[in-house]
Figure 1 (cartoon, rainbow, N blue to C red):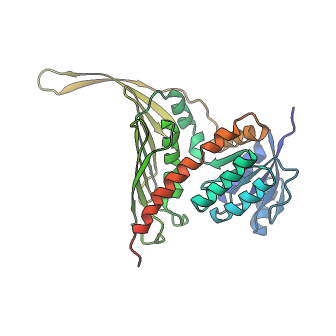
Figure 2: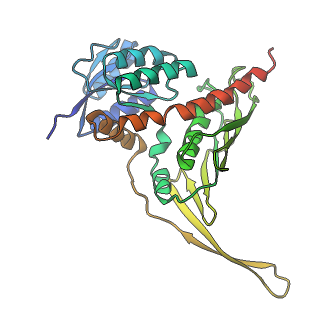
Figure 3: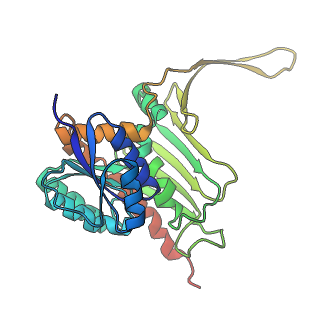
Length: 323
């Protein structure tokens, strides 16, 4: 049996703490060090999960992989340091605070042929994984990701919410879109001027498939719905409840006595392919990239397309009148 992978974690905030728990609980990994510039926060999380704290990234010669869950503005410098030491990297979304910097990071990972992942966590939702195994020829995707307002989230919904469903739509259709149309809404008085509250996006794909993706943080309840339309089937996914329902319309017959019509539809509820927490599944995928049992090149190729779409979406911010 090979030794557990030694993993360094950067970031001790909410998401960093979740990563620390998953890494520490893994039988195939060891949380070797936790890095956070805030000593009180970093030490507390490190002690909780039985590792050491450091204020900054150490030499990585004895580290097999790094997970970055720090603030987005710190991603670029951290990623370049990690990749420059030929070390595998998993970084929370977005990869960096601009598309240009994201492309620079991916270029370095490609040149050095290093394992690289972005934390697009919904890929590992058990319901999404199940739906993807059922796919035939999807032609239309709709996704709704609405939430109540959260003052702590200062970025707009494009990077906070929309990116997940753009990524899912690209993965479901199987290619990047060839056109992007988007409308942004700015409604909440507590939002920053360049932080949109609503994003409605339409994606056109080669071959004619389309996707409509809706993200909002002015909803009054949390909605995470994904619908995948094929010519003869509808696959509906509830990402919160983590369930999948498949519909196949059979017939629509007239009914006597003016009672309208009778619709016949076959409904299937498939068994989920996994019951594992998405973060655990994602980390398992990262470990496969680290040990070479998963295709690092194929993984890297999936990262830029959703980032490029969101970059086009937020370009609409330029149309917002300045105060």
